[in-house]
Length: 70
Image (cartoon, rainbow, N blue to C red):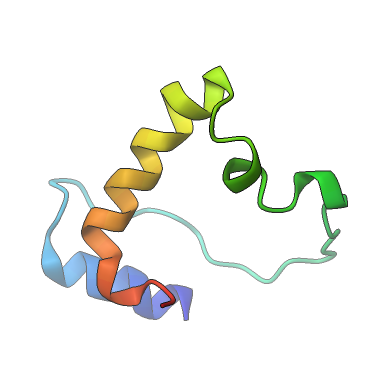
């Protein structure tokens, strides 16, 4: 799925440079603790979330609104 999205984004030419993210299988996956789950959703008023995360989420939603869950 990741490779498909990278191919779609590459075809759209949203950025001047190519996407160079390497897609590999994870050796081990560790689930984050409960207090880390949906952190931004539960802590949107925190200064870091407002200054750093919120603009990134807004940009993501702008470009990928059709892929968001309803």
